[in-house]
Image (cartoon, rainbow, N blue to C red; front, top):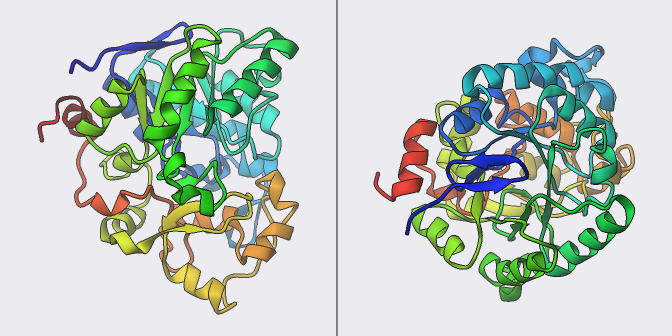
Length: 365
C-alpha cells in the first residue's frame, strides 16, 4: 500500500505520520523540527515550556527550580524560542503545537503558539469547545481536536459551527493504548468496543457529515503494518508518540529514554492523575512512594491544569503532575513520572528520526 501525502487546512504533509505532542520537554525543538524536516508532522508540546533550557525563560522560579504560576510553567517566551529553534531545523515545513485543553490559561497558550509560528493547534485532554475562539485572530492556523468517539466529534462540530461558523481542519481519534492521558475512564480503557480499530470507523463516518476533514488514528500505532491497517480502515494518517522517544533527536533526558528502554510489558500501567483522566506510564519508584505516602510534598507551585483545582486533586492522587513530569525531564528517575504508550516495552534501541520514519514508511529496518 502506498503511503500518500495528506492535507490539513492549507498545509500538505508529505508523509502520513504525525509525531504526538509529549510534555514536559519530550517533544520540543529538536524532535519536532527533525520530524517535520523529514516530511512528517512535528508537534511541539506547550506543556512545561518554562523548564526549557534550565528555566532561563521563566520570570519567576521558586524552590527546587520550579517555574512559579501558570504564566511561567507555560512560558510564552520559551515557546517562541522553541519554535524558532525548530524552524532552524525544518524551515517552512508544517509544524504544529499541542495544547492541552485542561491547561490553565488555555486560550492564552493557543494565542502564544500561534504568535510563535504554529501552523496547527492540536488539542486533547478534554473536548475543546472554545478552540475556535482562542485562535480566531489566526485564520490560517489549522485546528485539530482529539476525540475518542463519534458522538464527541458531532457535539464539537455542532458547537463550532453554531458559535464560529467553523469546523475542524482535521480530527485525531485516539484509542486507549496511547501514552499519557486517556479519553476514557479507567475501566472503559479495557473494553473491546473502545479500542482504536473499533472507534475509528464511526468517527470517519461522522466526519463525512461535516465535509472532507481528514481523520488521524492514534493510540497504539507502532509500525508500518499498523499504519497500513489504519489507512485501510479509512484514516488519512496516524499519530505516534512513543516510537519517537527512542530517537537521538528526542528532547527527553537520556535517563527518561532509558526508563522506557528498560520497561517490561507489565511495568506499563494506567495511573491516576490529578487531571481527572487515567494516564498511561511506567510504574516506577514514584508509584511505590505514593502508595507508601512518602512521595514528595505537594505544593502546587506551577498551577498547571485547571481540573487539579490548585493542588486539591493532586493531594487525592498523591502527587503533583507538573513537578513529577519536570523531574522526569531533568532525568530524576526516583521522583519522575514517565509517560509511554502501551507498546512502550517494545522500544529496545535508539535510532534517528530519519531512519525511524524511513522504517515506518517502508516496513524495512
